[in-house]
Image (cartoon, rainbow, N blue to C red; front, side):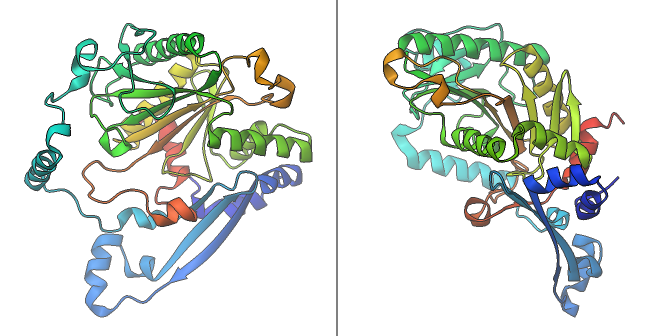
Length: 376
């Protein structure tokens, strides 16, 4: 199995046309990083990283997406760097102190999502009840039309295909109601923070939905414009080429009926994309398969999921925004999944370099691709 360190050789071995396609999307730089290990550290280094030689000369692969300027710095050795874990007793004490300091702002209900009709706010146009979920209006709003999709199953790692199909159906029903209430709201985004380490403020499993006005959310709009510029320059669909480039180096796969790949310019470890056609059962099944594989075979226990898609609804006639002025042709429904690290880690998985420079990724994407398809 190749590794990320082999990426330059994999690119060089491609036929000329495929290599040109890959290189118009990605720039890849491989550099050596060297250091000296003092005698006093050698025993610890060998225990932590396997050998002194592995630390004294390391290989870093930097991948930059020339189209969108996503970027990842890969060094799988970083997965073995020392981390500080929570002590369970200390963690419980800290939580108790934090809740005491918050005082009256802390809900007296241990799990408000256990009884949504009684303990959560409701949209003015009502709730949507699915077979396995129910909507609530977001009590601390981040958008004019935004909601929480509360799962009946509180464990974010416990879900089935039937669950995900129902979540998407209920979400679409909510979006239609929100659009009827606010016809200018038409840009839909769906997100799932899997557990507190994934960003969820309440541990009970739930997703977030928003329906925005005027323009799509910034990162979706940026992706649309980058894809249009790519098409204008090369005359081909960016998303098709992006999938083909990953296929050429062995990072694509099938997820149910849909195509998927492990993204080279990852923003988080195990950054996996799925291309769909709609927020439908095929997409739900593909997401199920990818999540279950990452959880069961790649040790993912906290995660983020986002579904990015073209506007769900046409603009209102008086908005002055015509379809020809906002070209979404060739833009697929995209699911992205990322790993947020071990829940017991004290430190965040994101630091200044990730926010302001280039993402640091400690998991080899080729290993992730292998685990996604490994049935052993």
